[in-house]
Image 1 (cartoon, rainbow, N blue to C red):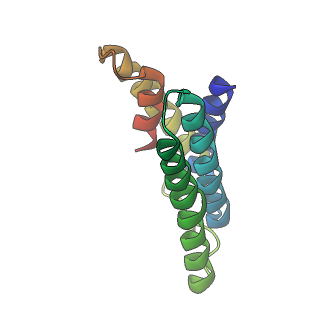
Image 2: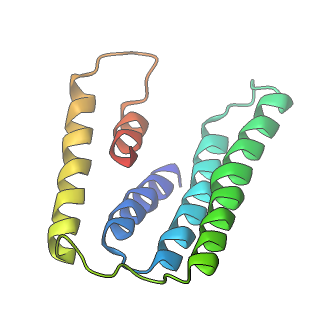
Length: 129
């Protein structure tokens, strides 16, 4: 299940790169917040305290799952801009560049040798930056 959430998150990064409608982008950001909450809760073991779990839920859902999409939708409504007016790069080029960044970031994690760092999480989060 954890790997499925990570794969969906990586695919959402690629979809966000090619979407032209701002509403879709805001929706994707919200979905990513809920995915991140699920991933984080699956990684928190039974030894973690209740306070830690409450903080993780509050931080991921409140910030990336609710607050950021709300602010994006509010900005979209106020500016009345629904889509990108013209693209500097084609959708295929944007998708190709995003996939390349994802592959490069996962490759960089192979060089990182740290026992305290989950390299898969690090690679996906590096590509999100």
